[in-house]
Length: 126
Length: 208
Image (tube, rainbow over all chains, first blue to last red; front, side, top):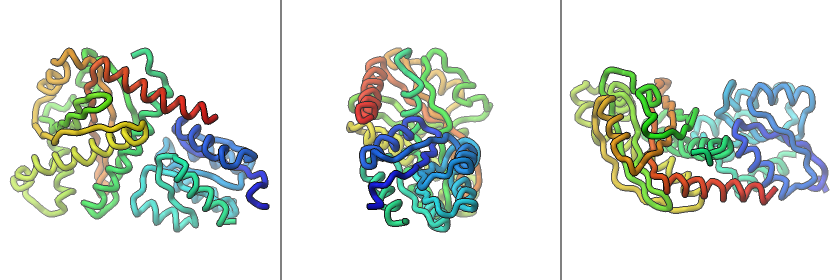
């Protein structure tokens, strides 16, 4: 029953509202998961190095480095982490970048539907 | 004003960032290249406190202003402001050709209305979708005016004493421009906006 096992998820987003929404929707589906948060790419990279999660949701437009660059750096040292790029910036270049990282880009806003896409990706990427 | 919390502003910034993302997608399809639009900050201020610095109207040149009226649970007059030089550069990128300045000027009105329509409607529609209400919009209008004329226009209507200012960064084909999106709101419109944001934020907390 891999679905019911406890997983660690890191939410990276500079918006508190977005972090709350992602956390709330995920916990509604996976109440046993352990969730940590970071507000920028640099903090996410540092957090991952000390306590690597199983999964990560990553915003693109944040202060400091872009989320896609942070994701690339994280995957360099921790290729087993599954990352979903969760962003309002849904242009082809970002979709392509997400795919080149072996990730997917899920369009904001954070809704049940976008969270379902995220959880599907995590599940199937195992 | 005091009923606006950091969380309200965070929610508005996020809502408008989603709108900016939609606008960037539409514009990138027009110009055939990557377009970056970000909303680095949202402010709510009293109309009487507006000054040239708040709206980056410190340039001595003229400004292009796309205006549109929105109505629904709250009414707003929206103004998208760029310097005219920047407006012409954006149009040049949108038209994607080596046009002379005279030719560009011919398209200025139409192209800026289209740009304003895309950005304003993307921002307002993301707000309407996320906060769960319906907004109707008028056709966009474009005027070129001095900083003084724009400030006068923003301050003259005492029935709209609040101003919601979004600073917008726009980059087309690596060329960076900055503008401002301004919403003029009546007291009751601002109160209604806060009520809708509270409902949205309340839903989040209830789910927690």
